[in-house]
Image (tube, rainbow, N blue to C red; front, side, top):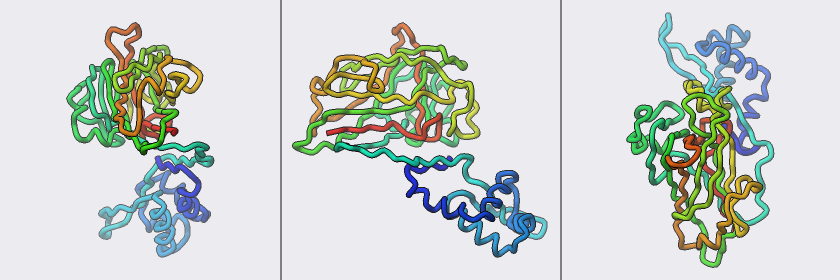
Length: 302
């Protein structure tokens, strides 16, 4: 998937698709990704030189790639599409108060202790083997776009950009998440606990595991129908307590009780204990998987 956070970021794509002939060319290569430049020229009724110009514009915008292949008369150039979906945020978020914002890929955890069913994958392949907790220590994990476990925890060190004299007044942590059923189970609750620096923030009961359809941005090779997409949730910690999405209170723990200042390290843990009532595991969807093309997003308002 090709994703842009604003109209400005997508300017080259708009320009590349502004020509009707290039739109026809894109339709052709999506119908048949093994077309050569000569075959495209013949189908569209234009010269090879014109095709080369159009393809160059599409390639510059990241929409197609050109590959060399052997043909009957030597080497030929094939034009293949690079993405199966284009997403553009037309109305980017505008912050009305001072905020530090960071995105952390799901594989950038600093500690883990997971129990099978478990696994971790990049946008290209599964890392290691399925149900092997050791795979969570492999270096490829830094490129991961999804991870899951039946019980245990995953822990992240969150960035702290606060400067001397700045006071944190709200911390938001956003992620796409579901429970981890062996099969599709939209009624498969899981007790998911959150903590910061060893202080329990509260428990949220995830309703289920979603796989009745494919995730909107999941790669084509991803066939595990029980882990297709999750719910985009935002954990909010401020001086009124801890909330999910600003409405459901998890606890009365406040920022003041966490004692976070500009010198603090912030260690965030997501955990499913084995002895909890609903031990339904956890799936974290990051970039390239699920419905929302975002990593774990941290916003620190000060």
